[in-house]
Image (cartoon, rainbow, N blue to C red):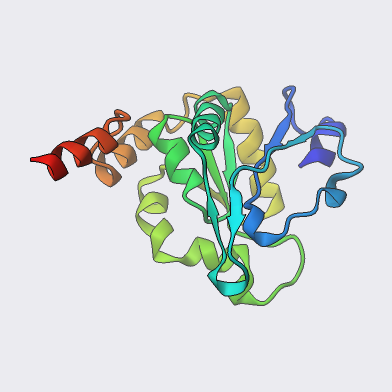
Length: 178
């Protein structure tokens, strides 16, 4: 995508914010020649191996929500970020292909086929890109027409989450104390 921006294939000015999960050992060396990319790694890794996990601070959560709410669009591979962006009204594209051959069970395609995405995909809350060409077309379409699929995103938010008002923690606390 960085190369598409540099080559002018992304038709409007764009910059990419990448927020990889530190759990998966992301290397910024992969992006040393990228000129349109900012990397933000949130969370603190705890544990190791299969039992490792990432703990997010209050600031990490605030930063992520702020990024999702103010992004022009979100591109994700099978994570909850697509749903979270949808709940904030931000257009979201799910990558459902791999840039190079990979074992299916480790692939973006497998995550796209997962039932987690099924209802969101069926309702049109997250637009799926099944090839690089579809990804580029979706990026350009959403940058030019951010209102596209707005009603579908709102429908998915209503169907998938009872509350979108930042007060769920308060409600849980009130329930526990009652």
